[in-house]
Image 1: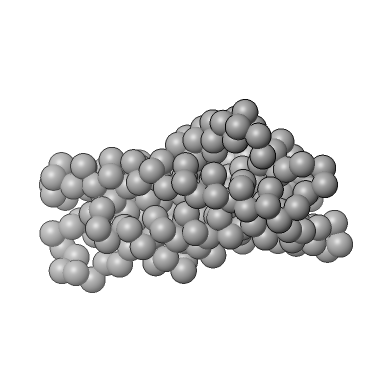
Image 2: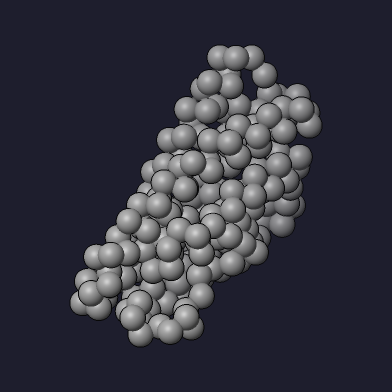
Length: 205
């Protein structure tokens, strides 16, 4: 891949990774509620899980949608269900002073698996494959795209988790914590609007 293409890919990866979406909202809320250190496994799950997703799709896993067209609608519905559940968990989370260590942030495996349900992740993968994968494909090109996304994505999602962690002193007040968590839950639900519209369109509604 030429230098100009790599720079363009890096710019695309940065824009896609730094902008709001389900991953960043979840990491922001986790950083605020559990701190940066306890959010690291979830953050790495996003980075590694998304990298694996890019690599798998680039090598042909995306053709499953053509062979089995019901898979994509099923993933959309599962993604909406998961994010609604997460929004409920965030909205009803106990203030930090009442948790007594009982609360647990999302795990590495949970966030890695979630990438396959994340509607924004599919948009990012689709954009990367159509814009930067050469017509003849090739493992080297797919590896290059995966590597660029992995390097660029990590500091972007780290910034969201760190930003959330910076709120922890403010959230020591239970009232502030409840407001923050409910705002995060609403933002997470709002991120579902485009995918719900796609589900309704698929159903002819």
